[in-house]
Length: 301
Image (cartoon, rainbow, N blue to C red; front, top):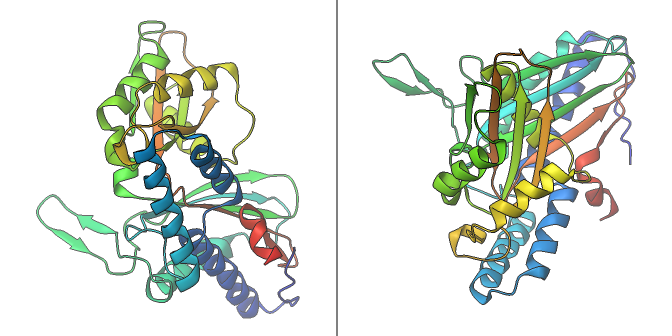
């Protein structure tokens, strides 16, 4: 369901309403799991045979219900805010999006509330900024596309769920992607609150591969390729299970994004998300009508 906000040429009103859209995106992402994640989590619970794992899933769904009932974040670690903005070349005043993100982040820290997680560290001392805003945080990734709408994806990157993340460059064909990913999950996956969502980037340099892996993990869950399914099955064979107590499912989904690469280098990036995979996507039209497309089930309540 699209929500009509306001149609005006007044810059102040435009920026204020855009801020409210981002604020709603932050709140829904922190409190409610997206539709596709809920579907994956329910399927994993229904397919589980391990009694201990089934009890862990029950606790997870109790957590989900309580968060919705009390309108509070699903997890005490509300993460570092990462925004991925695809904005049309004809979208009016795209520069207002950044200001809306910054203002909404500070406001959401108080209202949702979000735990203050932005730490400034100059190598000598650490300081919590208190409002989730710091140097280059919230992180904002920009992509200019054709059209007159904007699509804003928010990911709440928790500390534990980010721990298995890695990126490295190796000589071509010197290491198997599956082996690198499975080894990393075997070592650190239990710390990331499994079952996990896995994003893999394969590209030209370490930073490109790392960003591709993050874009893979925040994309809507789609059909698996054979390669993605093979990696997921190998991770599931580790028998980590929900919260590390063993069970059928250790990875709920695997997605791979690729770029062209240099003939002498092969870069692999890995990003992971916990079972509470807090990702939200809002689509905003040029008249500021909008829809949070990641959470459509909430419009049916």
